[in-house]
Length: 335
Image 1 (tube, rainbow, N blue to C red):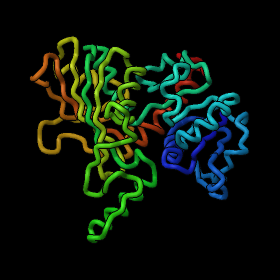
Image 2 (image 1 turned 90 degrees about the vertical axis):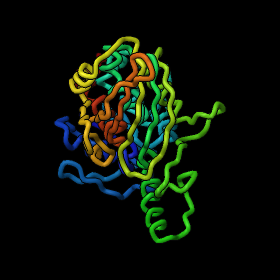
Image 3 (image 1 turned 60 degrees about the horizontal axis):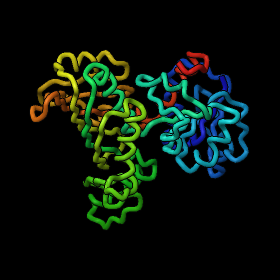
């Protein structure tokens, strides 16, 4: 099995390497691909050093699967070209709503791999990925009518530069010095910004609309979802406060049992001080954690959840590698 990672030097590319390092996936040849500014860099993987190779001159016919982890612009320019010679798993937003490209969370909708027409598979938005993996077992049992979600997202969702700026701003703020934001609309240190991505005409941001559109495509187009997405001054892991309205009655016991038995989910829900998960504790973990499980007494069949996951893992690298594993297991047939 020959693999390539486009964007191998970035946050998600390096995280894909970390995930592959832990997996038993046999790799014959690995190509670490990036822009020309990264040429000369070396990256260690499974006790071997690999040279970063130039994207502009890379021959994609050398590999069976190519992970794209370099952002929307690179995917727009190179992914379809690559898909003529290699199967592409794309982490950007560019192909997510393309009707000919399946948008996949393997535990939720791997059957949609049958709909692949461009030799491209899209990875969902990180906040959507962790949400649908918790919603799927509950939707199967009780049928979700409506979702109200408020997200509390880490700066790593914007890439390495916002992560570096959070550290820089924090130091400046503690020293009482002036802060000029570069990657944020306002100061992020010791603050919360209710704005991720650009605004649409109706007042929602693209991040909020992504959550609605992608949830419908992955899980069920009958689900109504409204979102408010907030950036917080934390490095890694996204948190979500989720309110659900079901068609059918439920019990908390059945909810917890369904979540705990679903691959990728883990319930941590003790009604005591510290009996819940926080972003810091989710960092570096594969699971999507669910806490604060309680009935919403203001609506019929209402439920509240607190969902936390490492956005670089579950929302990006881990999901991409699990897509590859599913394809390999099924001999590249969508099953």
